[in-house]
Image 1 (cartoon, rainbow, N blue to C red):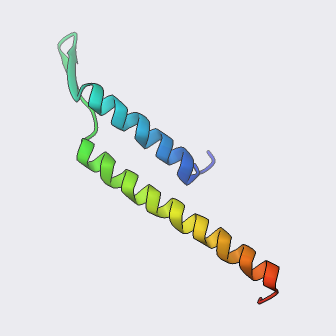
Image 2 (image 1 turned 45 degrees about the vertical axis):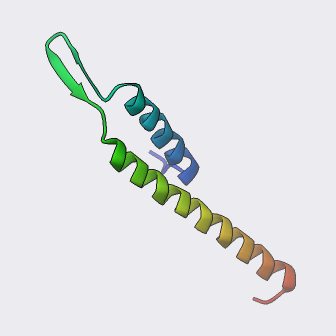
Length: 71
């Protein structure tokens, strides 16, 4: 299985957050299901946004180095 990109992970976290907001826990045929903790999902989302910023900065730095020939 291929590793997911930061953007793909962020999309999954956003989907999970939406599901949490729609209903945190429910029962079906006598079985209870509790979704992931919203607080934990929000923390993961913040980390993924930081990762995206770092990835974007790395691309900018690499492009600047390549364009100026400072390598």
